[in-house]
Structures are given as structure tokens and as C-alpha cells.
Figure: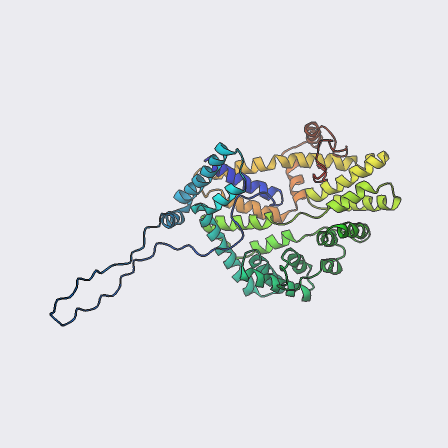
Length: 445
């Protein structure tokens, strides 16, 4: 397998293992016009000669034959044999851009991403994803229930143009009349720009679902400047008093999309479906925890704030993903710094997090090795395995999935925790290194 193929597979796996939130070189969300093949030559009708025998000027009959279009011809060849020539040419074009970047700047930046999008391979995959999006939207509209229609609007609202504006307006209207918290969560991610429609308020989610930690955090995300800090104080209190679970509806969205008709056979459409799922997951925003974490770092001398922060830390630790648990330990680290006697109460959680985090760091490599092994006979051989991985990521929570893999591999928790501490040169409960920028995420890691 080529280096670009391995890079592509590795990037997909990393995206999946980080809640499908990895960086994509790939295609923008905007749908483009369908690819046009080489037009058939237009042959004009030739009028019958006049009956007169008188001499007449010589006429030049021209046939309007379009010039050759090498890009269209190459795209057609790639589509016709995607699992052979097509994928190989796709990887070659990607590698050419990476090699050019390595020779000039040594990094891949915005200019290179734009260049990748303009390659034949980039355009071809973009068009294939747009076709998948159209099929899925049609299937969702045919289902007709409120949640399916909202997801259809969410998909269309991720594009650019009038259709996107109309889809966002429909989604906001659905959220105003629906009691489904997922519809509200989707609408908050697809607001109308300007006066194109009336956007719902961020507080609507917490009114519908007050036990959901993510619903309260949405109020912080929707605020700016000084208002954000004011909201953070209120949200911290509500999290400590009412929140019981954390659900941002990403998993529900991906599960619904995977329930739509999928392409069974390996090929371009199969890969486009995989990539579109990855892109939707990767575009999902991170929780706006920073203002709450800042409150817990700066206000622990106040007994009321300390008790609220401790309640939120324990709530976050009970959630089913690494990120929420990291946030919980980030708050616990501040609590321990202010009250060292609390360290013993958090030591077991710290050891467990360090071990699972260390175990997960090698998961991408192990998964990539499986995908590469599946690709030895065909450039599309990795697709069935990738499909299975995507399904597995929805059948179990991230935390449960990682924890289940450790005993199966006879991984020792204490050894993994020790390895994590040796690499980081600290415990997760110890203060962050002084050289870390102040703007760095205040997570457990």
C-alpha cells in the first residue's frame, strides 16, 4: 500500500477513535454540480442545395466539436475502475500535493487543502459525497417523521446557497414546534444567518431536557463576552443541581444515518458514504466547558463554588466518553490543588483514566494495521472493515468499548497508568506543566 493510502486510512481511524472528530483533508460540505462527461459532438443540420444552377459563393460547413477535456476523461476512468485505477490515481494526486508541500514549507496548510479540493480526485470525491447526501435526504424526507425531516434539513443546511438557507429556516421552524430535544440540538448547530429566519433560543434545550448536561452548556455556547461568564455561573449551579447525564445527540444522528440505505459493495459510493459519515461526525463541535472549568479553577476558595464544582466533576466522571471524564478530572485537579486532602478520593479515578487513555492512544495504530491488512488484495479492501468499525462505535459507548478491549488483550491497568505518568511526567491530578499555554484546553490530559 502507498504512503498516501496508509495516511488516508490512518486519518479515518483517528477520526473514529476521537469520536470521529479528527482533521479531514477532504472535501467541503458544499454540494457541487454533477460531473459532466465529454459532450457528444453537435452536428448541425445541412440545408438542401437550392434548385438554381447559378454560381454561388463557396460555403464553409463547420461542426461544433468541443475541445478535449482531460480532467473529465480522467474522472470517468477513475469512476469506471475505482477499486483499481481510480483509488490509485486518487492516492497519487494526494501524494503529489503532500510532496510539494513537504519540499516547500514542510507542512500542509490552507493553500494545500484548497489545492487538494481542486484536483480531479478531490472534485470526484466531493461529487460522490454530494450524491450520497441527496440520496439520504430523499430517504429521510420519505420517512416523514419529525426527527428524520429535521436531520434532512441538517444535512442540507451544511451546504452553501439558497437551498441551505431554506433548510436552516425549516429546521428552526421545526424546533420551535417540536418537543424532541434532538431537533432543538440540531437547530442550535444550524442557525440562520442575519434575518433569514428567527433562530430558537439556546435556553430552549434546557427547558426541554433539564437533566442533560449538554443542554445547559448550550447556554454558554450561545453567549459572548461578559454574558458568557454570567451564564457560566448560572450553568454551574444548574449542572450541580439538575444535570444527571450528558447527551449531545451525535451518536443518535450517526445511528439514524447508518439506518438509511447503504452501499453494500466496495467502490466509490461506499467510500463516499464512509467519508460523509466521518465528516459529519468530525464537524460536531466540542462542548463549551471552558467557562465552567475556569470558574472551578478561580473560585474554589468559596465553599459554595467548591461544592458545586465537586458535584459537576463527579457527574462528568460518570459519563461514557474520555472527553467528559477528562473534563471531570480537570475540575478534580483544581479541587485537589485547593484541598489536598481530596486527592485520595480521586486517585482511583485518576489511575483508571490514565490507563484507558494510554490504551486508547495505541488503538488507532492497531486499527490502521487491520485496515492495511484488508487492503492487500484490493484498494477497496479496507471498506468493509471500516464499516464494521463505524457500526461498533455506535453499538458501545467509547468508555465501555475501550475498557472491554483491555482485559481481552490482558492489558494491565497499573502498568498502563505508569506508562502514562512516565510519558507525561506527572499524575493527571498534578498541576499542568508551567510551559503549557494559558489557552490550552483544561482537560484531564
